[in-house]
Length: 371
Image (cartoon, rainbow, N blue to C red; front, side, top):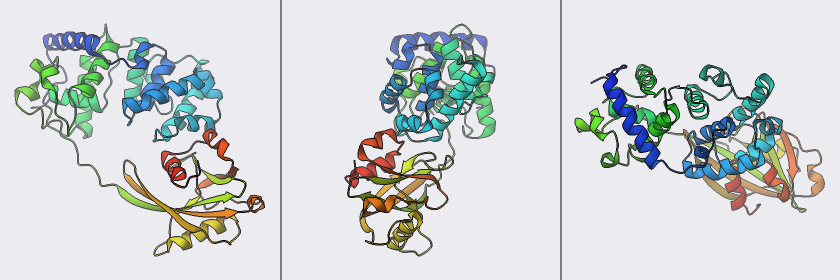
């Protein structure tokens, strides 16, 4: 049974009434729901991409405390932005957030555009995020479709095709556009997201149909297929990557850090300088190459210290950390290793919080007792 892009008007009215009433009664008390400030709402939507609500809340609060307006964000240096984002992952979001803030200030004088089309012109804002900001902050009847909403609609209308297929995504967007309540778009859109997050949940959990305000309207439940839908394309197995990383410290406590170029994995973040081993190269030989690339003395040789694995969305990153202690003068002429970095610096422990570090680097520093 395929979904109908234009379900009957009577059914649409029933869905709107029941979902909005449920949302107003059952919604979680989330801090970004207490404001209509488009900057704060935009920040929450970007942070919530691929990240759990309970993780986002303290980051959102700290970020707003330090950078409370789009003007403040636009004026901040990138290192400050990445430092406040450190630990959230998907750091391209923070870099896009920063660029978008500067564009809002430059093009609109710090006043957010209200239409989805204008919002989509900003870096890092796609159709979903534009619809969320427009409907929640400005009351524009714009549709939105994220993973939670796609799951709700796929079950509600018993969509059997993979929700990852382009044709199915187009069908779901058409449904979302038809269903959005023109009078209460914020409550409707947030109700759909809330239902998917708390009731119409994905595997391995089970949909809590007994709590769903739309259970009587759900085609998947009527067919006994609520556990089978939605259909998704199989996930790719994560690829594997190994880095040999060097913790070069001075007797005075300084630590050599390198900043990755803006693009790619951990772009714009500071980390212990690393190189990927060549084919069949022993890790100790790679560590020696890191030392040589930095222009550091060859003696003493680095010693193997810590091994860690970090699982990212499509990647298993294995870090082999080597340590070496250097005289302070040894870092005077330090150079940038390889072509992955754009800066190298000797950083005192007290200065680490001012540098954007990935969670992988933070965990590694803790394991090495360097924080």
